[in-house]
Image (cartoon, rainbow, N blue to C red; front, side, top):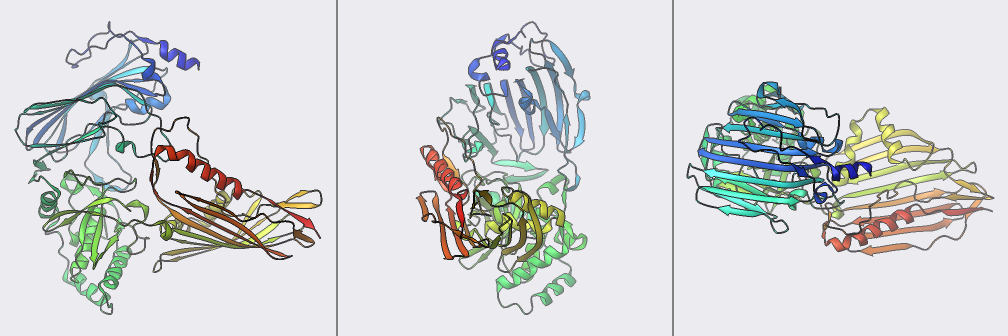
Length: 637
C-alpha cells in the first residue's frame, strides 16, 4: 500500500534534464503520474514514436523513440531495449538513458556500450541473426528509460506492425506510428480491434499516422481471448517487396503463395536415385496412398532429427532435400520439404504449409503477408486432409496435437496459396478413461492398480510421460495424485500404440493412511484418482468473453473392495449437472456388501461464451470440485 501511495505522489522532474543525445529535441517533461495510468500497472509507456520510411523495394528505415517508466520489479521487462541485426539489417543509431524517479540521469548508453550476442533459440546449429542490448539492474523504483534507435533493412517483406498495447499491466500515455512512403509502392493496411480504443488516424498519399493516448493498464483474466485478439493492431504490407534480395509482388494469398512456391520452395526437391529406390521398396506392399504416406513419415522420423540453421534466406527457404537426405537433420522447413520430396517420388501430392505453432493463432485470411513461425505438411486425401508434423520423432502419423490444431494456415501450392484450417479435435475425440481396482484395509491403508487410456488431445497431453526417467515418472504420478498423502508408486508400465493413437498407463500405487477413522467408522473419498483441481477466480465485473479453447471427455470406473468387517452405509444419490459448457455425473453403487462401483463422467465443451456466462462456468467447475472431494462412511458390520 505504501508503494502505491508513493507511486501516485512521485513527481518526475525531468524538464531540467539536458536533451537526450540524438533525441531530436524531444525533452522529457515534468509529469505528475496520473493515477489512472499507475493503477494496476507495472510500467507506463510515457511516449513511443515509431516512424517507418519506405524508401524503395529493398530499403526500409525504422526509427524508434520510446520512454518507459517502470513502477516495480515486474515491469523491468517492458524497459528492455534492444535491436536485431543481420547481413541485411543494419543498426544506424542506438542510444539509451536511464533516469531515477526524480529525473536525475543515472546512466547513458551509446551504441558501443550495448552488448552483442547471437539470437540463440537453443535449437539452431547456426544463426546469423544477432542483437545488441544493454543490461540495467535497478536499485530503486520507479525509474524511467529513454531509448532511441534507427535500423535500416534491405528486406521489405516484413514491415513492423503497430501494437501499442504489448502486454497486460502496461499503461500507454502516448503511442504514435507513422508510415512515410516516398517510394510510391502500393501499401496495404489491416486495422483490427479499433472499436474499443480511441485510435486517431490521419492518412495522406505519402504519410499515414496512427496514435493513441491515455490507455489504462488491462488486467489478465482466466479463460479470456488472446490479447492480440482484443488490443488494437495495424498490419502493413507492400505489394512489391524484397526478401533477402528475392523480389516479389503480391496482393492476395493466391499470388503471395505463388511467389513463395516459385522463389522459396520450387526446385529444392531433388533426391539421390538410391534414396528413391529405397522408398520404392519401402512402400512396395502398401495398398493405399495413406499407407504409403505413413511408411514414408515413419522413415523420416527414424532417419532425421530437428536442428535449425538460420542463415540468410535460409530463415525462410528450406534446405535442399538432397542435403537433408545426406546430413540427416534440418529445421521445420527442411524436414517438411524432405518429406514432401519423398512423397513426390511415389506420386503422392502434398503441400508445404505455413502455420503459427504453439499458442493458437490464425494466419490472417484477409491479409496476405509474411506470417507464421512454423511449417507442417498437408496431404489431401479424397475429401479429407492429412496433416504431418515433420519435426517430431515421436508423434504418430497424421496427428498434430495442440501444437498446430484448429487454426488457419497457408497451404502453398504451385498455382498459389490457399487458406485452410487444420484439424479440430472434438470433445468426444479427446478421451481419458481411467479404470481402477482398489483395496481398502482395516488399518486405513489402500492399494490400487490403475489403467489410464488416452486418445486425441488427451494422448498429446499424456504420452510424453514415457520419455521421462523412471525416477521422474514416479515424481510425476506423486504430483498428479498429490491429494493422496503418503503415496507410494509401485510398478509402472506404459504402452504407446501409435497406430490407434492410444497411450496406456498401468500403475500400481499404495498408501498407508487413505481412510480417516472417526469413532468406529471409516471415512473415504470414492473418487481416488480424477479429482477436478481447478480453482477459478471470482470477478466483480468480468471484462472479457469466456474462451474454452479445447474440449475433452474424462470417464472413470473403479471397483472398490471394502475392508474386512466393514460395509457401506447409505450411499449418495447419483449427481448430475448439465450446462452449456459440458456435463458431469457422479455415481456410486453397491455391488455387494464387500464391493462398491464408482463411476464418473465429465465432458467439457469448447467455445466462446459471453462474459456474463463466466460466473456460471465458475460455479459449474466449483460444484464439480466439491462433489469430487465428497466422502462416504463405512460402518462396522
